[in-house]
Image (cartoon, rainbow, N blue to C red; front, top):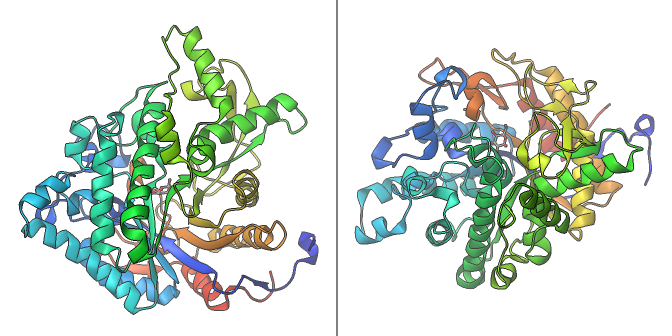
Length: 491
Ligand code: GAL
């Protein structure tokens, strides 16, 4: 099928059974940061240290209050008519020091019961209302105790993560069938350990991202194998990892050097994780050669990009049951050696990144430029590069500034354009997309931007102790899309 935008069908009906979801993450919505014996995580520590690392030194100690207001979240989920709800488990709420050793020693530990009951109720309530839970085991909130022992920089975390994953599969897997091990390891490796603007705030430029990415990939793969060998037969679920992917276009579309530069950025941002997991257990060759050459030039004894052993490669290869991708925006890439002011890992691949000034700004100052067509490009890229996998979009959204108008007609327009692109991806490009999740159900704690950046379908007044949830216009429009399984009426 081929149609131009002017000859668009009036109704965009998605495939039968298409999944319509929304997502949140524990630290961003729950609050209850020390309730009922929850252990501290790296974001508790990071925000409590102040120092302007977060907008107005805000914390998520209370956030949306979802730890006590789950029933209110459920009302929103039901009002939207979601088929899927994606949320994450707070690791240190379940295992206060991050390890299962603690729980096992104190078999009927009170702390354990509190955390488990909270998530049990969420899962049971969702299922009772016909909503399928998608659970992320870990969404940026590493237990502080584990960070104190080296966090993702230490290879020891691989076993610890696997034990936590097994604990979760064993506890919730009788009802939960869709799992994501790690949320955006690529974002976390970069912002948490390379640049240091996310917790734990480490800036090991040139080594931090590669070193932690390496351990995250191994941790994910090990957990996938545990599911595969110990739980899959009985539970019959699926496990993957949620990867952030921008779309990277060449700054000059006719320049071969820029085209290659754009490909290298896709390799660095997405394929660094996806190629080992979905193809062959190893990093993209273009990255291996670039980082090795630059490391040599800088006098390192070996490449700053670590190597997997043959055994690790075998473990990593094929360790995902579907492709989970999170898209927000696009960038332009230009071939440039040693680009001034660029990140070291981009210098490794001779690239300078730009924003096209014609791309609309969603929220003033935000990193998210409105580029809905980029999502179709990313989907096509995944289809072509990764053998046409089943794809779930586990996050996509647009922020508004604070105060945000409840009538967010303009933002809904961005969502509507995005849905058109998804429709084209499915019907023209034949991409096997099966689930789409909006980020986010609620306005929430947007990491370094605190509460100043609002991604929710529901507005929250963070000054009001009751944290009322009020639908934006986008929520009502999304509910219509879900009811109609697509867009009805004039585009
Ligand atoms: C993602 C992240 C979410 C959310 C979103 C919007 O990278 O997984 O937690 O913050 O970005 O910025």
